[in-house]
Image 1 (cartoon, chains in turn purple, red):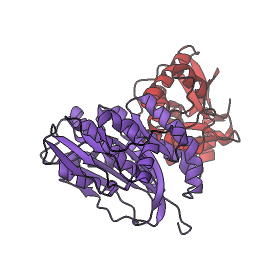
Image 2 (image 1 turned 30 degrees about the vertical axis):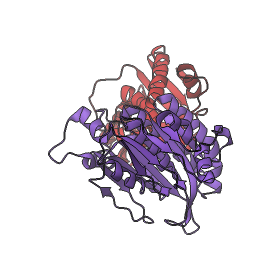
Image 3 (image 1 turned 45 degrees about the vertical axis):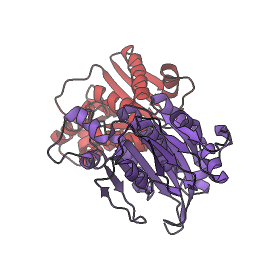
Image 4 (image 1 turned 60 degrees about the vertical axis):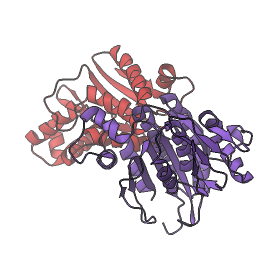
Length: 294
Length: 191
């Protein structure tokens, strides 16, 4: 039996929760078909999380491609289908994959599983980031290097902790409804062991309240790492500093919890618990356009 | 003896000849190993110039692996008097450090209670990392005076000699100043 999962018209970090809600009651080996025919838009988080979803199902899932030509074309430019074809049974019309060089995406969906992948990601982003961050988002030129550092550290979370590969994608777009400004978003998603299991691997369970939310608080707020070395845990701390400096937002989902460093322009909650389970860690970094008043 | 180590060259030799960015811990560990191999061939007391001029990006992980771990081995952190002496009498001067490099380096130094001397574009030395007010004033006094003796430093800082001696001993153990006979020279200012 195949269960059809209806995908929202707009697929981002918030609406992806409705997908996980639909999946929650199903056993991992149940065949599912993700129906994106009516999806018109997807954020970098939405696309990379979709790949992770497929990666974590015991039974290879099916995916109906978006019907809207513009949407399918964007997904192709973002290299979504390039990786989706290896993870899903594909249905519907899938546009021909184009080379990464033809794309208007800041960083196409890129697999990350080893240190060399981080070098490639950082090398590719720097050539485009300088122009786009300064011209489109009015960010200080100093923000560009910090942006690449942030991207590097977020990707290294996969290499160092996940235990399996994941994906990264970066895109700028106009966030009309939520902010009325352009933003750049970094999404780094994996279906690995997640924060709780990573910290448990070194320290075991840390008291009766130990859960995904507490693990996220330890790692993100208190810079705790599974490594005993005093120099560890600086990656997420560095990301937090960068996000704070440029009035951005950091959100990390792992297991059944999500933690966020919330700027004044957003109304998100700092911690969500008892979410539908999703393996691994999903990091979302949003940096808004600088306006004259800021 | 003065060594010059171009990190861009070490990166390409030890990791990949196509890379110019210092990112990831494995890359940092490989580069640090390359530096330590060069230090092993050096004389007993050396000043090593670590040159970032040809490095693009430096992330926190790599800064920790290269800069912080190098200093942990050879220099004493703040408040760690009396620990096991370092394997060699090595001093470091960091050159070609951009603002973005500095962000990463300062973060890892603060985390581990370390400090170093960087050379600014105009050639003047800059003390960064974890240093208390007394240490900074003593270091700046030695920098201004050039080769300085204890009494001059005490006068320059406006403190008693025993107090100045404590500060200078601490800065010497942290490899931020060098001691020559009865005199002191700040790293980066030359004897």
